[in-house]
Image: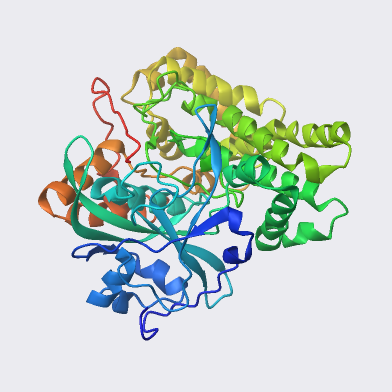
Length: 484
């Protein structure tokens, strides 16, 4: 235990008050020689933490798991999940929740060490993480935050001074992840399958209090919980689709109850528009392809609803009826968020019945002409409509006339709306790989720091960002891995 609190920790560990079935108390496993390589100064400051202190030797020890900070109650969380449609027992196999930091603003967030060693849920794994995947999560999660998409965030990455062995030996690392909470659909699946109804009720009550306190007042608060989670996930997945984000592993244990994006293993951003886009090396059937994400979210939410049935109504048939009514609303909620976002991307601020056809016609042309998703909308924003087969086609010329006529019926300024809705830059896959290679292979973090700076304000449309908008060679396939 650290003898003082020079780092600014303010832990209040409410999750540890839940029934013991939901976690196992366990400390991070110490590492040989922790070395801090990245720290998120602005995030640390917002949490009331002292970034400068964390950069010292003792701070690196805390962020690596060698030193338990004052007030922490380390534990590994239990959960289950449908992985590629197959249900299994899971849990934090390589992550330790230090506790919940309460910020100066009163916000409560989880502080979790990822790659902190074996836990009772490790299932034979070593509990460690390689440097590359931890840096990758840092880059992508911070880029998602800057894009305005709810997400877990990355506070720091520490090298362990040890090797982890996958197909070959790799430098080890620990990521400090910050989350509204780590409650998952899979947490409720675990409670429903291995806990008692009292355990399930305790978990639901805890979730309401932590994330949806306004719903506690409703007559059927558990139905309200289901409804609110559905709302947040509908909005979240719509935001993914609007920027071309492909999560890659939408298992039920990777869907948060808070509505944050979590787990950046095999994720990537789509370049050429194609609903069938898949990057993950293990998604052979394309279950989690870009175009399938809304449907999978609905499927996952149905699994969440199933766990709540005992709480929704004492009669099972009535409980099922109530749950189905809520789940059936997901697609319309998602569609409304997506359609609103697509209107904004096209500089349209009001609603007309024909808007969906206008949007779909553009997407069909983009797919046909193998157009880059992000750069097409950037080109429309700044009227740089040349140099591609899409913009030179007769069908686009006709579509453009329809679009411009539609914009004229929309206020306020279409250009400003589009600039604020279409990012100048995304974490292009080749740029991410360049940064990771420089850091992991050569110990050079300058490439990553420049990338992070460019990604920190994606709607700025600066000259520097132009350099990061290049499209990779489409003949070279891009494959991502889970980063275990």
